[in-house]
Length: 448
Image (cartoon, rainbow, N blue to C red; front, side, top):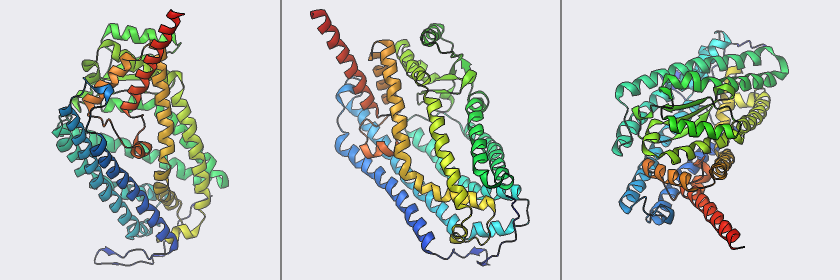
């Protein structure tokens, strides 16, 4: 399917540098209503979470007694409130800006200006302009979050130099990878016929697999230094745990996270020989040996349960459906005309499909979050079963809650939409319940 791009028939005007708003029709009104509703839903859930915290988060939960005192609980509540307040402002501004970009007539004007440009270059520019506008608008918020909000609670350790360098490197990575992927998708659309959506899906799938390998070995090291785990005893314990499960975990690293933040964390990434288990250096310093081993047992649980592969399968199925849907939408002139376009360049179609998918995906996010929380619960259970005790992981989670000022009592609806992990209180209660059940079973067996 070739992509001749005739000069757009501009139906709007540009006078004194001001773009006239796109005339409303029933399809555009429907989109605006869904968009506003999706934003309002998330903002309402944020406010609901704050009220719930104020009403039910003023007492230290029983599992955290002795670990977190009343003063620290107040700090957790204030940190949560400040973050939600910040998110309220940032979301309102960013979503309003995006809606302005879509409705102002800037994009039809841009497409008209690119009408005689090679379709690949035109597509890259068309996607880059709104991305650049949103990126510039987001800089003050990124700065405020790091150097005001996170600094207020002692989390931020990055300098202005590091912050700026990260921005530049992120921009370079996004431009290179985004250009390659978008160019490949547009080429599939232009030259592979009616089944372009299958070819484009295969391209995306290959890109995801390549990124899964490249991210831990090429991209992440651009921002942080990864060194083999220095603690020999800890490394031996982790390697022994992996060997017992027949896992070839060749990369166990510590990351210099403390150059940017005092938050603690650990994660697993990659496929095949690129598998890496990564520990924040701040985590290693603040947790004892058994706790770090328990955290790593949780991460190995993700490998043992094939969670990364399962996530790839799920996202692949979803993306195949989305490409099929895109193949139908890209032929609908009404979609283009509803957003002010009278011609139908392929790159505009791709952009509009993403515009339509944005608010819809907001309502579907609880399903993805639920799957992620299920995987995290399975990894916790694996750690318990492997270590024969829940105490070290439960203790590690309590410390992480204290160190990261984690909200211990989030509203259930907020969890559904925003939590990729079960709330820490829920995880600790599950682990300690398993320990209690195990002790009772052991005592009953002795009494037989």
